[in-house]
Amino acid sequence: MRKLVFLAAVAAAAGPALADQFHDLPTFLTATSGNRLVNFDTDPVGAPLGPGPDVEIGSTYSAWGLDFPRGNRSVTFFGGPVSPPRGWLNDTNVGGDKIFNFDVVAGDYTAVGVHNVLFGGIVGGSTLRAYGDGGVLLDSVTSNIIGETLDFFGVTTDAPIRRVEITVNGGGGWGLDDLYVGQVVPAPTSLAALGLAGLALGRRRR
Image (cartoon, rainbow, N blue to C red; front, side, top):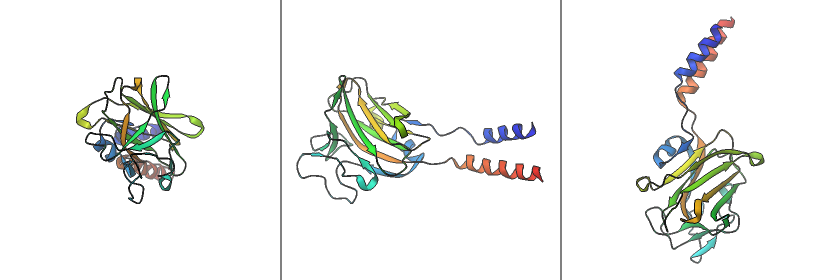
């Protein structure tokens, strides 16, 4: 009984877990590490995407373990503070909504976030869904359509992400840009507390 009480106290001391849904980039970056920034302007080595104003993304970011199905394109006609000179476009429609998507074919990313580009008006925001092995939904988040945060939205997950789908609800807005993929940062206080718990239990066994 004492062990259970002690472990409960340790868990309480560790503090709350980091949020798994985010609506601003600074908070997301604090909770994650090793982020890859897919800006749809350059490839992983910094070479400009192109030639031309409208190019398929495809396996451009395969060095980072990302593959974009046909229809996902980098285009030059986006405006706003996030997009120039290029942005992420997909005209694929499913039930009246526009779908952006990519597969994680290598790497164990547990964080993903993106900016909703306010171009053409967003009716119901955009919803990001992160899927794991076997197509299991790990987490989802809907943009809050707040311009002050450049309408960033993202999630962190407990298992590696294998596929991401972003639905532009109602198709009223259709642009995304500056995609981030990375890993969750473990809470230091939680790790320290677990170490104390292990030490205390070890002494008790003696």
